[in-house]
Image (cartoon, rainbow, N blue to C red):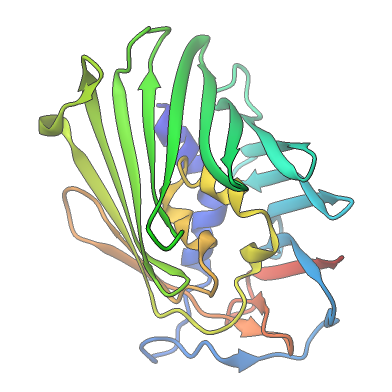
Length: 283
């Protein structure tokens, strides 16, 4: 139930893959079109909203140039996830994510730890329908310092031993994530049980050479949130993805194309149909 609700409430982001699908016959869609509509920000900026014409599907609130709150709104309902970001100095120390239902189905508090200035671990204390769970996450980087994987060990329902294991493994090409493999399995005696493993893969293709608007926001926020919604791992890439494919453990792969219009500073301002709008705030 929890996972289904999370996927539903995060459909505000995932929906962008559907409603922004370009109807052109080009394969991949032409991603290098520019638009001069609206006001161009020429200096530093930060992503403020992603709007579908009737609703701000994503809203990023900044205070003093720092991300302070995030609202993710479901396109087809009143469901909203609210993230509250707390800092210690200039680094994010805590992220609290809650839904807007009673009782909460999503009520997660993450505490972040850094090593040599890079996010190296975080914990999650979670309450689901009155039941307390705890997770310990470890962040791994490759020899070149690129994000490699995020491993979660979870203690369910007050257990003193780990009961569940997940691994989100990233494959990069240059500075873009081209694949994310999300593997889940049970644990026994503190050891993952390989016979229970199940993997869902997300493929990201046809990147442009423009600026990914999510790079204007703290990457630590997206590293944490990607453990909830693995589909959105592309938000950690430097450029804009042109095609996303989901391969579940069973069944056919599902692909969604994405296309963009850009301003003169090479930032996306909308999808090619101009349904989804990317709205920025100058810094």
